[in-house]
Image (cartoon, rainbow over all chains, first blue to last red; front, side, top):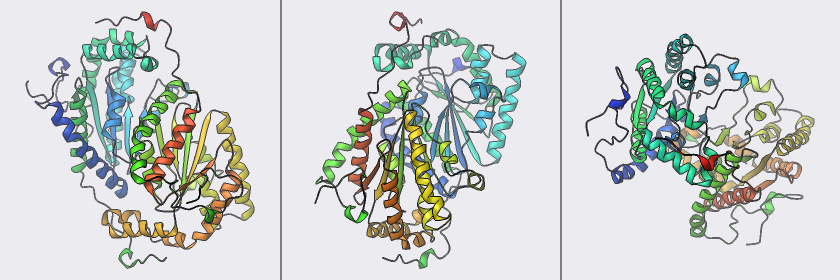
Length: 266
Length: 266
């Protein structure tokens, strides 16, 4: 198994990225390492919250049934839920469509001290919107620059942006969709219309490649996460988040003046 | 140890409620039963989300350092974070103060299918606001009726409201505050001003009693949760939430028409 970069750089061809890549790691190893990473992430989240100077924004995109929700749950499992706000973007409402495409997204970005997780995001406006030709080509093409400028604004205001594409194979999607069909408690997640999206698989891969080529920046990098093995995916994404936060020099704020003199009365 | 009601009914005197009450249960027993309750809550949350007909709103109030945050984390630990939105209300902003006191709260109530958790809430407007005399008596007295009408509106629209007061003793608060003083990683949580609140302990108890007497309704009951033993508190609150949701007759929605005919193409 050849080495495979995590961060999208240069011209990306998704066929060069194996969804089965695990960097030579075994399931037991990844599962054994995950809890300490989750705990460390929770510590760093608390310090970021206490310090209140920076924010974290995680963006998750993927084809249907790739496990976007379960990733969001797993990575932040140990964190204080008050400090981690997970928002799933659905098809836009009439009111949302009456604004520019970043309006509803801007409203949901995390405040300083908080972690925001977007399950789907403004990238849908250059993915499903493009593939289904909901706007002319010149419009969606223009959006790449808008997105980069918007993410730069957030970055310059102290928000660290990490974007993750969960890369699964078409076979893996079939298996996941079949599980939804076979389990009555998962029928509500199955929409016959999803099969039309699956039919356009190659168009979506092309659209994702353009996203990586246009919008993977130093200040808001795209990560191409091998997604067929969820235990590797959970491990590598949690580790990537921890590594990023460790690099921020987060610190608890100084104690209030006079705290060392305090005696708590009965 | 005498039996002690959980739901506030009739004239409440907090001195009749022991913060040490555990209903004869031992720590091991509560801790052993908690994981299954957390998992069941997660299942019920998923069904409520899938069905999309009802919502859940949990309100947590307590004196400082009673463990409001840790309760919110513990109860929903197994739930999908995208479906559980925890919101902490802080001192109101200038913009918020320029509106009626329920304006900022209404904006944060859960949509159908979601669970909302308020850490502090509109009840601060009849607690701290009252004790600190931030508005005249006739204003805060009038708020009880406004609160009941607001909660009735939510209830009639399908939101099940459960309110929890974490009842700790003044000694227990001292111990928790002392821990914050002794641990440098908790200094950021300690505000010298909190001691002034502690000094008004009896005034707060009186204000809480009025809250229970005025605003514990059939459609939005207040629960007085013994809070000195966190293992009992976590157990009984999680169980209470599960029992409430079990009573709702939640069901997965019917599968889409024709789902039994679906064959997923390669």
